Structure formats: structure tokens, C-alpha cells
Amino acid sequence: MPENTVVNPTRTSPATDFSIALLNEFVRLGVRDLVLCPGARSQALALAAAELERTGSIRLHVRTDERSAGFLSVGLALETGLPALVVVTSGTAVANLHPAVLEAHHAGVPMILLTADRPSELRGIRSNQTTVQAGLFGVATRLCLDVPAPVGEPDEAEIATALARQAMDAATGAATTAPGPAQLNLAFREPLSSALPMGLTVLTPVARAASGPTDEPTMLLAPGPRTVVVAGDGAGPAAEELAYAGGWPLLAEVSSGARFGPNLIVHYRELLAAIDLGGQVERVIVFGHPTLSREIPALIARDGVETIVVAPTGFEWYNPGHVVRAFTRSIGADAACAAASRTPAGREWLGRWVMTSRALSEAEASAERVPIDKRGITRAELAVLRAPLTRALLVDAVWRASWPHDRLVLGASRLIREADKRVLGKKITVLANRGLAGIDGTIATALGVALASQAEPEPRSVGVTRVLLGDLTFLHDVGSLLLAPGEPRPRVQVIVGVDGGGSIFDGLEVAATAPPAAMERVLYTPRSVDLKALATAYGWDYELAATRSDLERALTGVHTRPAILEVPLVR
Ligand SMILES: Cc1ncc(C[n+]2csc(CCOP(=O)(O)OP(=O)(O)O)c2C)c(N)n1
Ligand SMILES: [Mg+2]
Image 1 (cartoon, rainbow, N blue to C red):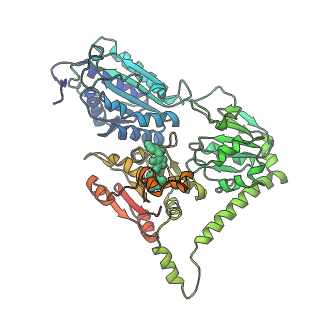
Image 2 (image 1 turned 60 degrees about the vertical axis):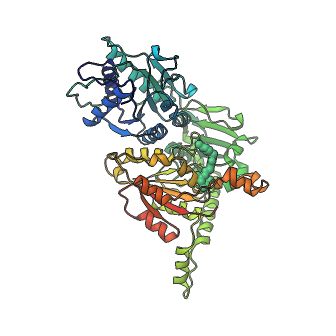
């Protein structure tokens, strides 16, 4: 038994009473998921969580690695829109949450950290597993409270409920319009827990008023100059609505949540480079967080282009080149916009963008089409089905296989860019950690998305969560494959493009001049890992798709268990 562990069923422990009051209040406030990593100092919270799971009040997810736990909570929150609680013990356990905290901070994802700590008398004297935990995440937390150890005073349950409310308001952005991480650093003194009172009641959440900006006026756009709407990551359907209302081209990234509708311009990169299209843009309306192209920031920074940035929430405004002057929480198109979009000039502006982009998509599709040759048809078709896969084929196949009840999570690096360059409009849920675009935590994030979406009523629950990611991104988060016996095993298919390491670095200018061996050693960093053996070790299903027919079969097959699909690609 770890030192300092005291579970004495005959005594009461203020730590346990406090933990019950705190977690009960979070459940009442609507929290549905609790991610927990084991540890002695956090035992009162852990045992209270186990009881709440038993009574059906929360969904409990137990993980060994706190880095995985942090990103799991990001995925759960991306799907539910609610913060998940993350409970960890003291010391490096807390620091392992840092990558997920930074992602949540920059992406505006709600998250509540309950970090157990030593009480004041054990700090600063080289006690075991003791560091400075309060303030560890710096500006990345919306709220960080160093809470003294409960001692059994009568008002401690009240203090606990007030803390839960404060953390919930901070994490959801109710107070600041900037959802993100909140940390309660909770000191606990021995006895670290006691037996739980019997017969805890099943809790029902109270209805909470929707948070978010309310009193800011909506900016109303007049028809005005030649306009495009940009939708970066997380923009949501509002971008599509505005583009439609104004009759403007919609340049929507693949994880924008707005990649659909008649105004969508798939080939926005090429078109922005064209003098008669991109060269004529006078006004840009930006939603979300664009990160996938150089063309969008270049457009905004160009002389004579007026940009308006729209973000309903957030602590920082998108502002490439520091040239943006207009920022708003809410935007609409005035009545004259609809009329202007029906004028010959309005139709011509949108029409040229849409037609040119469609022509490029059609040219791509026909270049890949099997030639219809009466004599050779079977052989030609077979040759295509047996040909090695490319990133384009992989991305297209995954996109085709995804439906509205499914979820698609895209890792950072090249495959998300490939998808952004080519996939046609489709109203499906695509998620990506673009807050900091790390190659860490992608599997854990996807597991969170899968667990939360598959716990919902049908038809959402029947979907599959697919994760498309590179080989290094997969290996970076391989520890998140670890699922303890008894943990739910959602339908998740992890599709790994194995192409000899960080193939995105091909695109760096230095790749043309640096010694190839050095590029290989310090940038591409290829690894040779037997993914099948890894899958077996972690108890995941495994398939290899080396050809188009293998891939189609693997993507359309029935998935009931977590699975890894390895797809060899050339760098
Ligand atoms: C945590 C973290 N470390 C390093 C990077 C820098 N980085 C960006 S892409 C990349 C390589 C990714 O390789 P892979 O997953 O195989 O994708 P590919 O480039 O081959 O598509 C690296 C190391 C990062 N974004 N995040
Ligand atoms: Mg790779």
C-alpha cells in the first residue's frame, strides 16, 4: 500500500465528505463524464467517483496515463459541449495534463481539473511527491484555486458546492465568454478517505441557462464589396448561413463544421492565387480558427482587403499580420444582401468561384477514373483496385465512408491538409485538435469523442468514430490504446497512414538543400514498429489495407470493437 494511505472505515474523513459534496454538485450542474487516474492523495475523490458511477450519476473513465486522461477529456468535451472532470494525484501526475490543458486553452474547450495535493504543512519541505501545483498551468487556466484541506468544519459542504459552481462557470465561459480549463487544486490531509455513507442518492442535473455572450449587438453587413467568407476550425454552421445569406463564396476548412452547402469552394487555395478571383477580393469575413493554408493569412494581410473576424467566444482574436481592425461576437447579413446576391454582379461573383472550383474537382475525378475500354475493362479495373494507395485515395475513401451519425477525427500534419484540399461538401462531424495542432493526444481525443457520441440515443450512438492520422502521430499517443478490462470499448477505427515518419517536412524549403541523411535522421524520423503486434498487445483488432479494394472493405465492414487499420503510403 502506498505511504500515507489511510482508509479507516470506522472514522470519518473530511476529505471524503468534501469530495462527495464537490462531485455531487458537479453532477447537479450537468457534468456527465469524469476521467480518473489512480493515486493515493486523490483517493477520496476516486472512491466518491466510483460510487457515482455505481448509482448511474456519471460516466467514469479510468486511465493510467494522465496525458491520455487529459486528451480524453478534450474529446469528451468536444462531443458534449460540457466540461469533463479530470481527477489526478499530486506531483508529475498534474504536469502530465499540461499538453491537453494548452490545447483546451487555445481551442476554447471546457475542462475541469481536480488535482489532489499535500496540505500546507507538507509543502516546501521536500515531502514525497510534492511540488507547486497551483499556478502550474499559468495563463492557460481560466480559474485556478488552491483549496486548503478540509478539516471537518460544518460549512465545508457549502464551500465545496460553491467551488464547483465557480469552476463550472469558469470552464464553460459563463463568466468570461472564453471556455477553457479550470483547476481546483485540492489539498487533502489524513485520513485521506473513509467509508462512504451508504445509499447515496441518484442525482439529477438541474437545468442551466445557456452561457455565452448575450448583450453584444449583432454586426449587420451591407452587401458592399466583393466578399468571401472564411471558415476555420470550429467555425460551425453560422459561417455557411452567412455565406448563403450574402451570396458569397465559402472557403471552409475541413474541420470547420461548415464544409457544406451550395457556396462551398473546395479548391479555395488555387482560386485565391488566381488574379481574377482571389485577386479581386475586397472583404473577408472570418469564422473559427484557420490554420491549414498559407493563402488565407496572406489574403487577409494584403493591402486593400478589409477583414472582419467573428468569434462568439474566445480569449484571443485571430489577427494575421495584426491588420484586422474589426472584431465581433455575432454577425448577420442585412436585408439588402439577399437582393444584392440576386443581381447579375452578385451572381457573377459567386458563380465564377463555384464553377471554377467544381471544374477543378471534376478534372481531379476524371484523372482518377478507370478508362472505359471494352476489351480491357476488367483488367483495368482490377489494376486500379490492386494499385498501391495514395493519400488522395485514402482521404476520399474515408470521407465517402463517413455519415452524419459517424465522427471523423483528423490528426495534425499531412492527411488533414490533403483532406482540406479535396473533399467535397458533406454535413458530417469532423473534429481536430487545431488549438495548437499538436501530434500528441489524437487517439485519446478520438476515444473521448467516440465514448460520448456512442453513449447518446440513436441514431448518434450507432455511428463509428474514425481517426485518420500519420504514423508518428499514432506512435506519439500509442499509450492511449491502453484500456483497462471493464472499460467501455467504443467503435473506433484508428486509420494510420504509414509513410516513413513526418512526411510533411518534404514541403519545407530546407528539404531541397539539407543532406538527405540528416533530413531523415532529425526531421522525417521514420520508425519501424510492428503495428499488428502493438494492436495484439493492447487487445485491439488490426487490419492492413495495401490496396483500394482492401481499404474499401476495411472501411465499410461492421465495427464492434476498437480497431487499427494500417495503410502503407509512399513518402
Ligand atoms: C507534440 C508535437 N510535437 C511535434 C510537432 C511537430 N510536428 C508537426 S507534424 C510532425 C510530423 C508528423 O508525422 P506523421 O504523423 O507521420 O504525419 P505526416 O507528416 O507523415 O503526415 C511533427 C513532428 C507537433 N506538431 N506536435
Ligand atoms: Mg507520416
